[in-house]
Image (cartoon, rainbow, N blue to C red; front, top):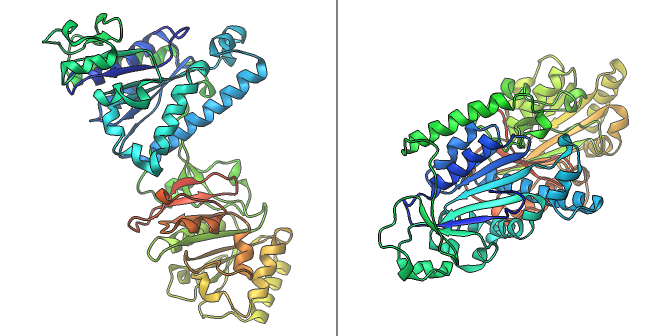
Amino acid sequence: MDFATFGHLMIGGAPRSGRSQVLRTIAGSLARTHSSADVHLYGIDCGNGALNALTRLPHCGAVVGRNQTERVVRLINRLKGELSRRQDLLADKGYADIGEQRADTAPDERLPHLVVLLDRWEGWLPTLGEIDHGSLTDEITTIMREGASVGIHMVMTGDRQILVGRISSLTEDKYGLRLADRSDFSMLGIPARKVPEEIAPGRAFRNESGTETQFALLSEDSTGQGQAAALAAIGERAAARDADVPRHRRPFRVDTLPSRISFEEAWELRDPEASRSKLWALVGIGGDEVMGWGPDLSQGVPAFVIAGPAKSGRSTVLMNMARSFRTQGVRLVVAAPRQSPLRELEGTEGVLKVFTGDDIDEDEFEELIEEADASREDPVVVLIDDAEMLEDADAASQFKRIIQRGTDQGLAMVLAGDEEDVCSGFSGWQVEAKKGRRGILLAPQDSSSGDLIGLRISRSMVGGPVAPGKGMLHLGTGEVQTVTTPL
């Protein structure tokens, strides 16, 4: 593979013809001969996990499986964003392609080549290829159409399906390993009579010319374990060689989100810079490099919405935010009209009052807030569980005042409620909270729920069983982020 001329590559073959091994050989060869600052690798494994060994290479940012839908979407979105960024960069500097950019700039400013290895196209089509009416497949075709000139390359394997249809027309470089039917070689422009009846594993024929090729192994041990061990050995040598490569020149990561995490573990993953504000609160961990995420209520509208159906973990998120605030010296006023774990905060340090009724007296609430403001300089946050029950509370005007003017007074509000009822209507304090465009959706069941946090979400992102622990977080940036919420 010479990156001066290489675009994309497709390899068709029947099962057990050596398709996955070709990808392992390519990855190992690239890692052996190129720095992890110059070549970045990503794997999409739609088969039996043959690409997992690539994670031992310092060049590899991620290997995602077809069952990791959320992670695949994150990877494709990052690649799509990188494609746009590179197109803008090359256009601004007047470069025709990545080759000119790399030849004309200092070594630490050269764009790396990104090689995406996709194993088993026939496994992609009925699973990831069906998501959101084939949007991921459309992104793959866009990358293949526009990516080669900016240094993003696809190397794909599959059965005969990869040699027909729209995808097959996006590259001229193709090889055919042993196919289920010799007549299928006609799709490569090779007459069946020119193909031997017996084809050994790893033996392939180049399209049009029919040039016979034997793909290499990484070591003499041809078993999957032997090739994985060879990749690991290459990875160890490459890691030692690239020890001085700075982090910003290494591949971006698309890490796996843990299914469960404690508050203490998640708190250690927060960004020290972003969480410097006292009014920052931990909501969950997420992102490509798995960090703690949450809103800073000292910025913008001082409100945050937690929405979801019953048993989706709304109260748990509220408790995590309460713990975050208390850790940083923020005082709390709590309202829990229904049975809620927030009632257990009654009498604990930093909690001024816990309201448990289905109404809150305006004078009592106003006096409580004024006394708190006069007594100390620490911020005060109002936490409300089952907020839909207090939509018409006597203290509604005070709630609205906090949302509209709380930023200057060190006041903020977090409300949680059922996605069908909370923040409904056209006016009122809860509609004002929704205008902040910040919140988290837990197991949303309707695409219209995105309005609660200021986003449009597709139908493919909603529905399914209600399982606490995962949510879609929006911090006002316009991008939704999947996060795991701490226990």
